[in-house]
Length: 198
Image (cartoon, rainbow, N blue to C red; front, side, top):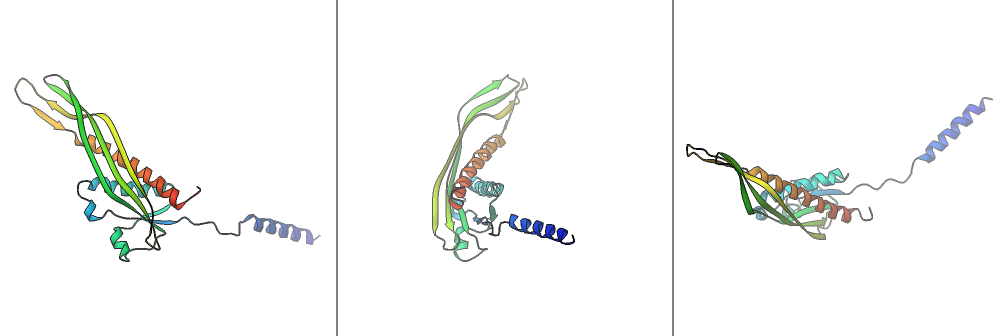
């Protein structure tokens, strides 16, 4: 009778042991997101840095071990920084935004200017093997957005005073939207490359 509890405990221990998978789970690749090289910061500095930041956020949101290297491609090639399985670079970022026609709405005293704003972002995402430095994949990124937006408000009056206030944050918000969208595209390219079949 004393053997029965011992046998039950032994059977439970055996079935519990078999429930665990003895083979280790494949670990996520470690991805170092590179900073934009100095020579590419002119003109599109905000967009380039935003795509890099949003790309890292997108990858981490997908459960990928992505980190900011704090270094450029050139610095990593010189042996600086931590080891990574892959390095990601946003290369040759370019951005432009312009008004294509507008309309003033209001009265003599107060009004708003509404314009058709077209913003465009283009860059290239490059994926390098972290051990050899070899270019694994390169894909162009391009995003364009058109929106009708208020660009300024104005106040006038019979006293002949007139004031207009530009609304640059409106265009800034549009840039932020398309750079985030470009970063999503870049993250998809990275995931297809470093996690094939997923």
